[in-house]
Image (cartoon, rainbow, N blue to C red; front, side):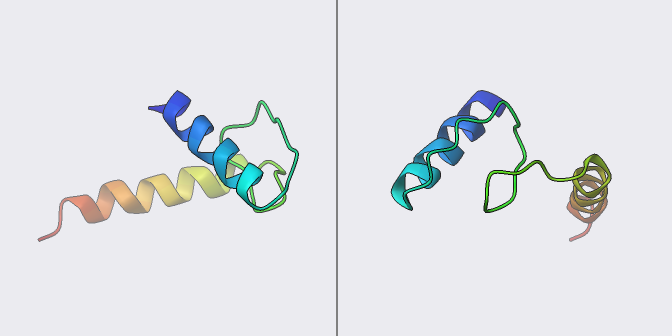
Length: 53
């Protein structure tokens, strides 16, 4: 799944003219890494809300 995300992100960067080949999986619009805590909190909210109908 993460390899697919990395390929998707690389295609988006190419489409807008950014030449960023980052080892980071989760990045902001400039290709800089997103703080780990922000990724954790977003993931936690998604999992929590997934159980709601």
